[in-house]
Image (tube, rainbow, N blue to C red):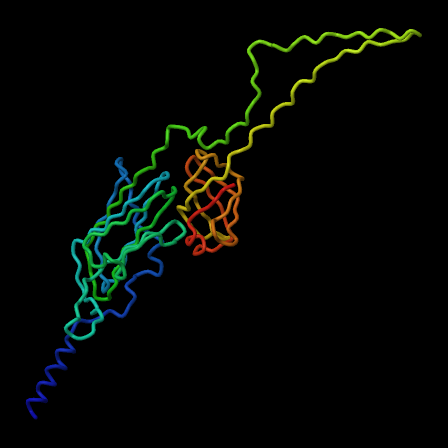
Length: 305
């Protein structure tokens, strides 16, 4: 009986001396995202940041930002050099199936409207990986945010974030006339005028006086009808964001494809998908639709008349 009491006391003492789990939210300020660390691109369009996180020390997350000067692709790499903490056990059928998953450092990339474009956390296939890479294609110019954060209250980590921006090269060749409607058949006009001379026919006056001359002339052929404009253009939606009147979309076709501000179109396969193009560049156009972001993302395609 005495031995049982001693063992119970030892177990209680060890439990009392266990690691202290923080009860705060891990942030020193209410809005840590308002002052991100700006990653400046060098002459190679690259940049990097080294930092460390510690949930217990109110350093749960690191906010960074990168400004893209023009249309292009962005590659973000997260290299975790050191990480410690306690990972929750995964679910299993019995005790033999229990395995502790690797501690994960999460990553999010957001656009200028704070919409998450891509992520990597404990629910993704690369959870627990020491190196994570996310590539974003055909981005519009502007600011993009990178959010790195701890997922456990007892976690701490050291890491490096590297970015590489690749501008989209402008096509030096014109698409004319591949995307312009064919002209109708025009009449063949010879180099030299071969119109026959029309003889003038004079009628003899009637016997009782009076008379007039009649000249028979040939009318010229009618002018051909003017050619029609460009036909329908299909395009992919490469960026979606919430706007005051609905949803703003960016498509991967512009003036090089024959599009222009004011042309009308619609998101394929959804209601309230009609729009009028605006802010067209050589490779992209923007528009606003009344459909929701989820409806637009389910379609992903537009047709412009």
